[in-house]
Image (cartoon, rainbow, N blue to C red):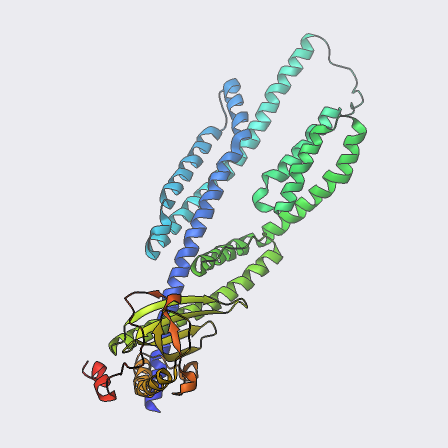
Length: 434
């Protein structure tokens, strides 16, 4: 009872070590993805100031002041460049280094947010200033020509070109929000923009605006609202999901930044975490079996992966036994492990009667080794019990293993019926002296 408790405690300790290693690596990958995405957003932000800069440059040329706009934008660009430099080759760095870079990139991001607020304020002042400048110039021109009307005239109807320009601006706004809307909505806006260029008369423009543009713009506002409501949680979940996909060597699925997309990510994260935990456990068990078999004098001589049509997956490893025989260890994807002894050959065939008898005798001898294997695995904290099975010694289970199906690491001696294994006592010398 006490021995079982010690073994259980050792296994729990090994599991905790594996879990901590997996947690650190998962965090490292998440941070790398977060850094990459954050820097990408920073780079996009610098491209969104083109109009504000154009206004600032025009105003500076006319009034000698742009309320500091050009300098602030330059500061933003320098900070973005600093973030890009920090993020270089971050994927190849260790967890501590990546975490330090993440802190610095988030600091740069916070500084840029403050600068963006200054840009917005400066842009508003520049718009007003430019409006006042042109307004006064126009008023002066009208006064000089005595052309100012005594009473306001009726507002002129918008021209076809004006309507097209307004619709084009709305569609451009939708397309500019590509990172916050679904691909299907972006494609709808892109197709609508192409269709808009073909329209010329006022009637078609009105119909197009009512049937195509208004529903599209309604969907756009809905998606942006939903994006803003879940964006922080979604982006964090997406980083976790992509990091898990890297660990599992699978391609991440496409998702949308919305409540449904967030829920899908959460389910995928849970599934991948369970899968990776099982993979780690299987890897540790496989490594422990390799170590125990090596301790007892069994060398790996071949390995293969088997993928069944029904989706099942098996891993086979061959360990040299004696006289053209090997122990075939099968790892199933459900966690079951089977050990079976067989003769080796380069063809698919059944053993003859004499071969079956000799193989059965060797199976009986291997039973003692199997008991020792279980003990040594338990000493490493691996208590397999019902998960590890040994086929009973019987001529019915005698088999010939075709090594042509395996990736072998050494030249293989084929099994012959006249070969005899050393006695059990001699065999035990292989590991009892260690």
